[in-house]
Amino acid sequence: MDRKYVRYEVEGRLAIVTIDNPKMNALGMPVVADLEAVFDELEDRKDIGVAVIIGAGERAFVAGADIKGFKDVFGQKDIAFNSSRKMQACFSKIENSRLVVIAAINGLALGGGCELAAACDIRIAADTAIIGVPEVKLGLIPGAGGTQRLARLLGKGRAKLMVLSGDFFTAQDAFQLGLLEKVVPAKDVLAEAKKLAGSIISNAPLAVEAGKKAINLGVEMSLEDALVFEAGLVGDLFMTEDLREGAGAFVEKRFPVFKGK
Image (cartoon, rainbow, N blue to C red; front, top):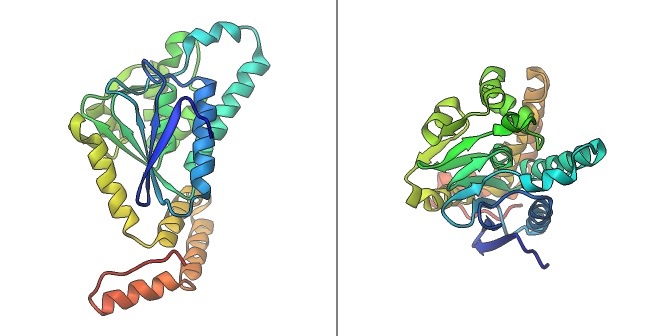
């Protein structure tokens, strides 16, 4: 498929997804369309288990929306609503993917870039990264799921701190808020993401998928319903060849060979 703004490379069971929209990887609708198309393709590739998203260059992961295009939408509520919904749908596809998705935040992650990172499963940032949702400074709010995902990740108070101030946060401050799982030197951000991806890929694929599903869906349920849901997934995994292999390998003191069955 011919994609102008998003590409991916495969390394074993890992896909490196690169957003490349010079100069700052702004998240216009053509970029969103390319990103969604990439994840549609990756979802169907059973040989891939983890995706890392990174921005091209060294300045930006994704530096926000294409603000120059706003002038074409002023006074057109339906267009703004539909654009917001399209971005939300793309990010929800990433969040709900069977793949584990790691954001390798190698530079500015502002507005839609922060929202994209929030939709990923795990966020690793360069120590030079700057993160924020400054939409209120323009007269707007995050519209790609940011108000909802940040509240679920950080709690309402810290989400409001980010959304209502519109302030920029250093990687260290974002880590303290709970938005990031790890901060590393800028030169190491992709290598660290690949290292984590390798650790995840070495595990039983069906168990990894079940773990992601249990967390993502369970937090939206009551605790009792979530516990039943978790137990159901455990029951499903006891029907797999991979569990037999993993348990057998443990007893036999060897490395397991998982087949995703």
